[in-house]
Amino acid sequence: MKKILLLIIISTFISCETKTVEVEKSAGIVLNGQNKGIDFIFGSNESAQMAIDVVMAYADGNFDLMNEMSADTVMFFEPSVGKIIPVVRDPNYTFLKEIQSSYDSINRYIWSAVPLKPVGADYETVTVSFRENRFYKSGEVEKLRVVDKIFIRDGKFFRVNQWNGIID
Image 1 (tube, rainbow, N blue to C red):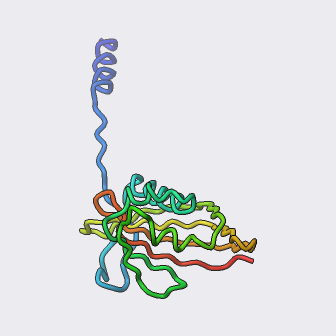
Image 2: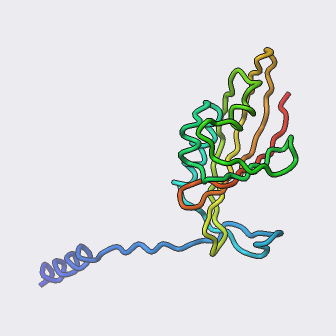
């Protein structure tokens, strides 16, 4: 009798299925702007990887990959200019070549990439923080801490906001 009862209990536990339920957990809140008061949820690792690929493609001069991953127009905020620059996808890479023209090379070391999505939005943002060493053709080296906030929709990036600070 004990063996039968033990067999029934064991078979009950073995036959139980584990059900996984995904719960979207709040990951912050928007304090200002058009989405004020809206919560963030975590975005996808795919978007995080895409943002990393964009950041590294720029440093490596891989403009083909950047064009492949970009929307037709990318709104770019670079801190030294102080305003948003609309950059139209260009098979000749005119803008990208122009802003890299004074560099011999760029090295980047990425610390993190954090994907977030405003609740109800059709896009994700990925905040990528990294260290950048710019080697100028003149021989000068500039060392920066950089944060890029990359906006992604439908597998294409359409906006980049950048902040940086000099490292001595």
